[in-house]
Amino acid sequence: KGLGTNWPAEDRKLLGKLTSLSEVRYESSNQYSTYAVHKKNIWMIDYCDHLLVLWDGRQGEIKDSLDYAVKINKPFTNVWEIYANRHA
Image (tube, rainbow, N blue to C red; front, side, top):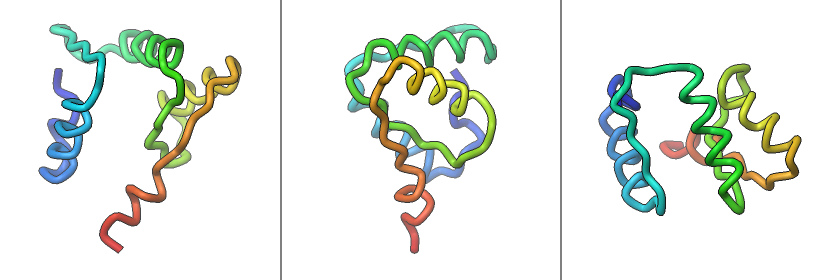
């Protein structure tokens, strides 16, 4: 709950589209929790065949998740450049 609520309208629309295309969806009724986000990320990485990530190179939760993906040899594609240049 609350994911993307402070994002621009265009990004919220894209999030909705991507969410509607997902095979598995989980929504927590709890407030944001770093621990819950970490556990969710690990679960997604463990159960996906290939990870699609939107990472701008900064330290944080996404970097930690990518470190885990690398550790378990999970293939991933970072689409940050495509996202960042979408209006160019």
